[in-house]
Image 1 (spheres, rainbow, N blue to C red):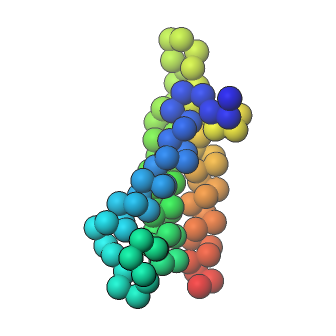
Image 2 (cartoon, helix red, strand yellow):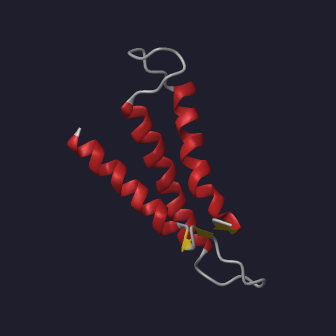
Length: 94
């Protein structure tokens, strides 16, 4: 499997944040059902930042059953941190 424990949140939380932003903060400059680059970067960045903090909290100690929270065989906070940094860099160069 590509994830263990709560590692599936690495993909789920950014997608959920994008959908939440599309509902709560619709961009009038795009067609209904589409999203702007700003919404995409904010959704993925905020969702991945949440996962980074969650990964550090969940992987702080080894659980009694030995489960670690991984995504692609890495602790879930590191791919989430990389995604957050990519979103910040893209937003800065935009």
